[in-house]
Image 1 (cartoon, rainbow, N blue to C red):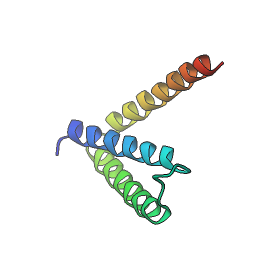
Image 2 (cartoon, rainbow, N blue to C red):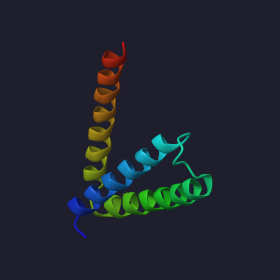
Image 3 (cartoon, rainbow, N blue to C red):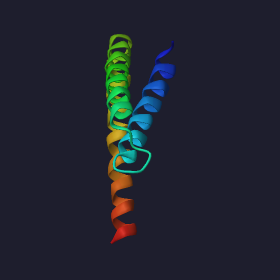
Length: 83
């Protein structure tokens, strides 16, 4: 798997984890399934981050920076929308 593929997969895992967190407290929420998937996602994130860091630590840093900026922009948009 190339660095780019690993980063893309890492983003997909983060997105899946975020979607799972949003389901908490909804009728679709199942605590046992939630806990099992969270363990899986956390393990996969750790594994992928280690793999990318070994190959190209700068790429992982850039990924983290871009993700942080995206979260700030999204939070700002949500604040404006709800404000």
